[in-house]
Structures are given as structure tokens and as C-alpha cells.
Image (cartoon, rainbow, N blue to C red):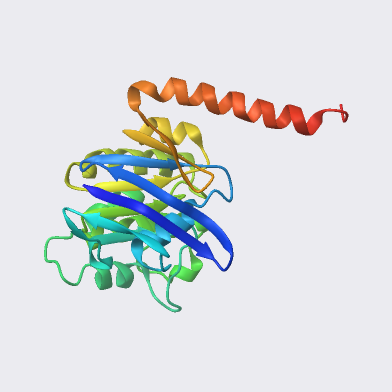
Length: 227
């Protein structure tokens, strides 16, 4: 289990996360849902270690989380210049003898022997996703994995996540609620710097309705006197 207790993170005087507590079960896909600016990316980068926490702890299986436990796919993918897709995957899987690059790539059909610089945004996302598989770590963190990916790519990622979650703890964020309710086993709502609630699959309709009403209230307040 991934356990986060009392996590507080600030940028100068601006507190983004305040005494946040979260439990993520193994063998599940756990969604982190929040409006823009809620702190989803800050949470993910803090768990990984890119951002220093001001307070709190992150534990995995009873010990402190290490970067070596995590395969992290950020929203904006980054690749070295003049690198080919195959070289990228070979680099990430160099500690393994069982990662079949071409068999996995048969799912996405990427041009692995051409420079990554020539890839579209969606193709780069798919390559980064293959990189997660190559790393083979027990915790996956995916920040907006479906952004910039076409319909077919989204479905491919959905199906792979359902298969590989049996050996991993997976956290994802998304701005598309439908993608959450399709792939997630649990969804936690990030609001006002903390987790406002966690919903199981059976409670997803309740979450959807609550979110819809909140958005309607926001829109109504904004439009009053305009139309």
C-alpha cells in the first residue's frame, strides 16, 4: 500500500497541499481528480521526489518511498535530442532481459527506428507509456496520460492498465471524467489542498452527480447578469 500522511507542500508563502492524507491500495488504478490548479501535479512530483515536502511522509509497503519504486510519466514528455524510440526503450529496459520491445510496440505501432523528434504529441505519449512498462516498477504515476492521445490510443492505454495493475499501485490524473470512471477502481477528489473524499466504483455515479452540480453552480454564478 502507498500511504501519504499529513503532506504539506508550499511554494514560498503559497500553500498548495495542506495536511493531505491518502491511501492507495495495491492492484488498483487510483484516480486523483481536481480542477485546474488544485495541486494534482504538485502531489505527484512530491511523491516522486522532484518537489521537497514541507511536512508529512510517504510510505510504500511500510518504508519510505524511493524514486526507484516509481515510474513517473509527466504531462509534458521529455526525450533527449537525436534519440530514436528503440534506443529510448533499450535504455530504460537495460536492467532486464525479458522486455520484448517489438512485441509491446505491436500494440502502438510506433516507428521506433526513427528520431523521436519526428513523433507527434500522441506518439510521444505512447512511447513514454511503453517506457513505464520497460522500467517495471511497483508504483506508476501518470499525470494526464490521455491528453494528446487519439481515441485508439486511449483505449489501448485503458486495456493495458487493466492488465498490469495486478502487480502495481497506479495513480493517474485526468481532466476527462469519463476516462476516470472507465479505468479507475477508486477516485479521490483533491480540493482546497487536501483529499475531500474517496469514491469506490460503486459510488462513481454519486461523484459524477456531485461534480456536475458543482460545475453548474460555478457557471451559474459566473453568468448571472451576463445572459
